[in-house]
Length: 74
Image (cartoon, rainbow, N blue to C red; front, side):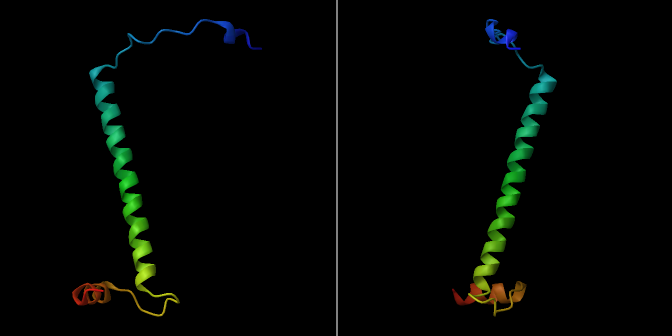
């Protein structure tokens, strides 16, 4: 055990991605960012709905009630 810990580190400075791998990595990164953005939007929408419902959830929150609330400037 531990024999490979004393080996010198491998120099990977000359390693480059192929064009196909580079495009795949870019697509994967953009996909992850879109997923995180979508999760944030859902979380924000849920938090806004609970805020609009009031402290005890007594107000019904629907499409029309949100539009009326926005029209009134609240």
